[in-house]
Image (cartoon, rainbow, N blue to C red; front, side):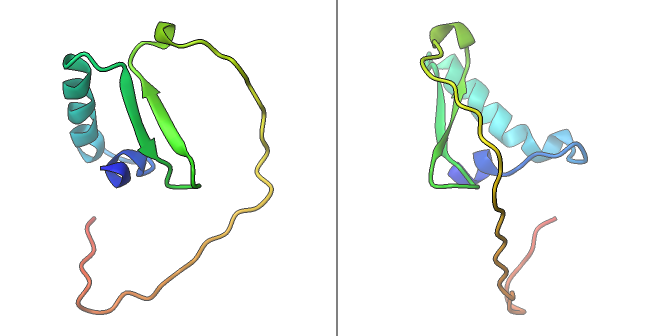
Length: 84
């Protein structure tokens, strides 16, 4: 579930590509939950989705600048399947 929510969405993505997570989010919201927490795909932290921003208060705000980006690549074998 973390992977589905943390998968980056770009302007070129069609709505059908992220519709499943939107449907799951709406279902969770309809059950009375305040939000969702899922693992970040970029770091060891977590992302928070709040359904109502008035349910939270900013207690600290920091500005960060990206200082380094690292990509690791692995060769896929022929039996691996890729999805578009």
